[in-house]
Length: 306
Image (cartoon, rainbow, N blue to C red; front, side):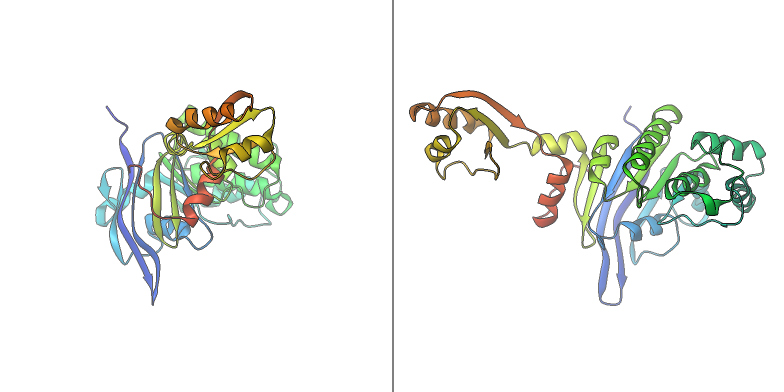
């Protein structure tokens, strides 16, 4: 059986005056996904997350959590969801443990063991009794995730979880998310600008621009579909470029990299051989998610399956 849907958004639209923050956005998150939610500033990512959480109302469209529409009695589905929206806020004079105890009480989590459990999960046991004002940005972000995990959720929404983190902090965050997904089966939706990190941990993505969905689908499928750059290892790059002329658009850089379909590669090699250029190797290059993101956010809408 295919994985169950944990979040489905249908034709979500949000209008502020004359501005459309969201314009008919639809996508699905499945159980076990680490789902990357990408887009330039102002694309509508945080607006979408706030609507899912019930913090603001959509102008139109529908949100389904765990197969039920999020309205009325179905708001109980929110109990199965955790979230960190934008920068997590805490009482600076309280310890990390103290903050979590307050938040646990407010959210109806009465078990003291729950606080100890989430502190261990986010690796803050040693600093648990230190005032939060002494915490680094990375420690505050981890405490935010600990708060999101208090009710043992099945789905966690993280809005820019690596903002302000140094490379070590980003790596720690990535490893923690991957571990929680792998060992506890938690489904994640991660809004982020850190495209390299998203590529390393997410299996599916959605990309927004100006409130509209540009593409959604499996990361591997998206990038393999778009693999149309080939690097040719030759003995004379300039002579090879001249032999190919304008028939094969060349990528900028010192190496000979051409953009073409796979079925035209033999034609390119034949042209080089006729010109007396020795071809040692032809290497297809997979686009990075960052390259793909830049391409689609400057181009037109793409649909690779929702």
